[in-house]
Length: 265
Image (cartoon, rainbow, N blue to C red; front, top):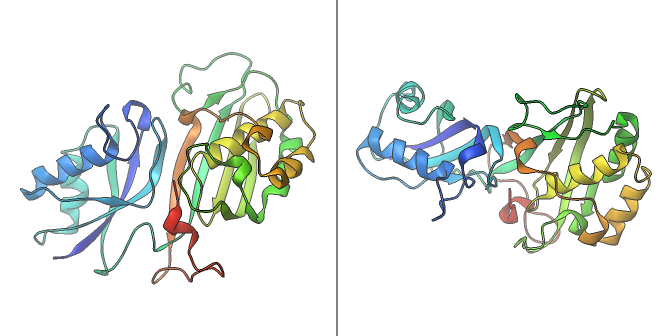
């Protein structure tokens, strides 16, 4: 059976998240239903990470074993005709039989989007966090530098995060945009704890509002205490943009495990 890797784009507003849950539709459930209609049998789909309710993606990766051979266009053009309008396959390729979308990941890039207009924006309300107070973009850029590198990010994980450890590496964190219009936090790292990007965004916005100095972010990181950081930013501003892969699984860290084995997405 060929193993297929699908790259997905979705607008997550009406979904309970990636994972199948009893309290509403999930991205996984609609994808598996579409594949069942296409292939005639039910298949199980794994993903590169679990996005939360209301979170979007332009580069989520899913993988499954196909029970029969179909042309690749069937998994793009054909499958898209069976999926709802807010979910689409943007690419499909055959991969090695041992490919694992989570454990083979070398890193991810997320974008968190803020609308900083003085008034609400009907067109951005489902895709941005609307912050009406003017934001100091340069101050947020300075604050972001304290988060680069490999650290214990316990101060930025959700209270119910199940990861065994909180050590992660942020390779880059750019603050793009203009105060009074739209601002984005573009974060690339090895892996991410539950709500980590949203907590980083909420913390940087505290600096942008002038409530805290840029150096405060370093103090929060060193504290390893979630209560010291800013609020969790709303889900609708977050987009999983890309998952990065090499030719195989990444090397294990000195602690004997890879970050991605415990990634909460």
